[in-house]
Length: 132
Image (cartoon, rainbow, N blue to C red; front, side, top):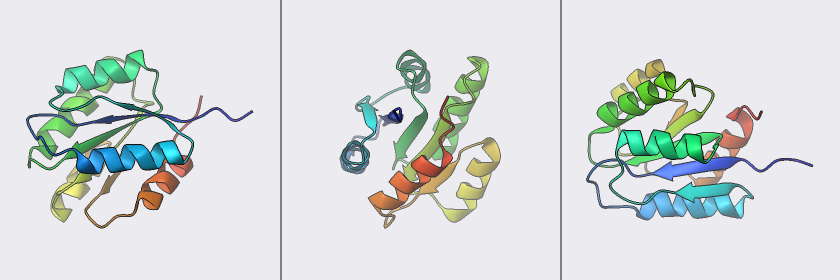
């Protein structure tokens, strides 16, 4: 029996626009994944804690505020400090191409920008999550 992928979707910071996060969460659920949506205005620490408590396979951050470098860096550091680097970190939002390369260097798996299909996200997770 195949174990369902467990994915945490989070909105860090003060950005109040969560339509994209909800669309992705719904698409992942429809694809048979278990999704935990943390809601708006989460701190990086809250996101890392929730991911560990929920024993997720991946964390998806939705960031439209322009603070993507800050929040992704904090979540990467939080996962490292908790010995949870096996949790795949990915994200989406309005993120400039030059920052995508920097985020990947930090250890972020993938960034989906506006126009990416939900199927691209589903396929990416199925192909890249290291299931234990």
